[in-house]
Image (cartoon, rainbow, N blue to C red; front, side, top):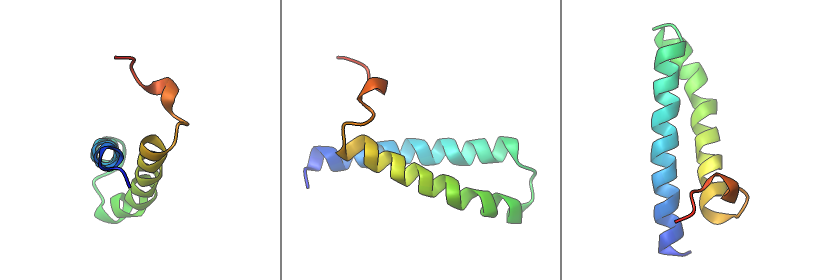
Length: 66
């Protein structure tokens, strides 16, 4: 496992998880049960997208060219 890929994974996971929680806080009612119910699938989706972003070349079109 390359450490650069792992750092990329952690960064994208942190950003996507924060966006998922923020989206849940804005869109859903303030009921804790509803927020917990919807946060699980969104956080699993954030985990999967972070893995795809860090370890495969499937999301290269979304990256900026430096």
